[in-house]
Picture 1: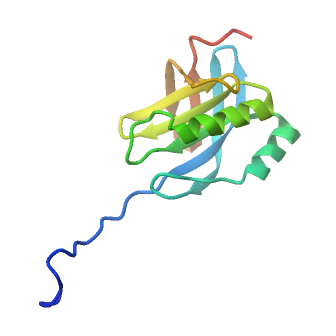
Picture 2: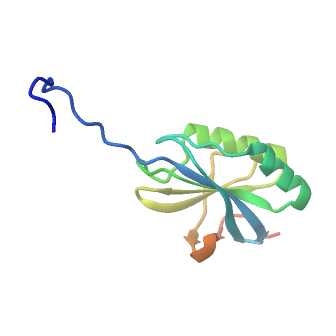
Length: 144
């Protein structure tokens, strides 16, 4: 309870939910991406970070990084300008297409980034299963 002398303009600030992120490891077979989430990280309401050196080491060692999964707890599941720039950098670094999966206020959406100029092509379907397993179907991608 506020003291009688507290100004009436002082309001309790609501705690905003923070973004979370994971690295996706797995494989792509044609139009099907099969992965699982590893290395959870928690950030700020509109920003999240992860161990980039560990991701690079994982890719160099196993070659199985297929993308990134993160939340937009207060926004729709659409890549932000920062998301696009980050994905372009990773795609350029790894030399292969990657997924950017976002769980937002409107549900889970997936975007495929092919190169360092991509804005992210929406995948047809993406679903999160127990134990962090993620399946994405990409009807617009090339068949390998």
